[in-house]
Every structure is written in C-alpha cells, then in structure tokens.
Image (tube, rainbow, N blue to C red; front, side, top):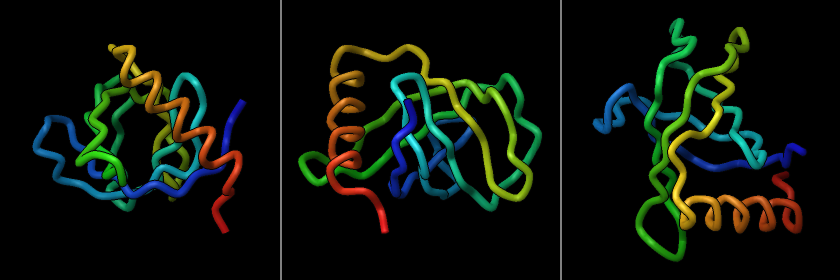
Length: 101
C-alpha cells in the first residue's frame, strides 16, 4: 500500500549525497523519488537521507527498481535496521493522517 508523501531528500550513488529530490510516495518496501537528476540507474544502489524533525537525518539505501520518465525512480529499500523500519512506519502513519497538499 502506497502513501502519498512530500519529503525532501538528498541522494547519491555514494554517501556524498550530491543530488536532491523529493519522496512523493512511501510503502513498506520502498519509495518513489522525484528528482531532476535523471540517469539510467536500474539495479544500482542509491543512498538517501531525509531530514527529520526529531533527529538530524534518516539515512537509508535502496535499489532502483524502475524509472519514470521525467519524474524519477522507484526504489526498494535494502539493509534496513529495526530502527529504519520503525522510522518508515512513523513516516507512513504521519502522511496517512496528514496527506500532502
């Protein structure tokens, strides 16, 4: 089940996070990352970090599953810790209760 979201994000092929974008939907397994930095990255691992109000950053990684022309990438999260899963559940709950405008 996907939840519409609006989360600013920094991302990259390494933890240098040289690109910017926005997560526009979340699911238990991944997200849709909207970005202007479109390049063919099928199967590549992307590192993303999201600023959070209760702590500095949520850092997670995912594999590019698909590309949406002129939009961005669909990512499947990988190597998530229990804390990562908890953060993701909290973000999804927040956006279920407070959908983006």
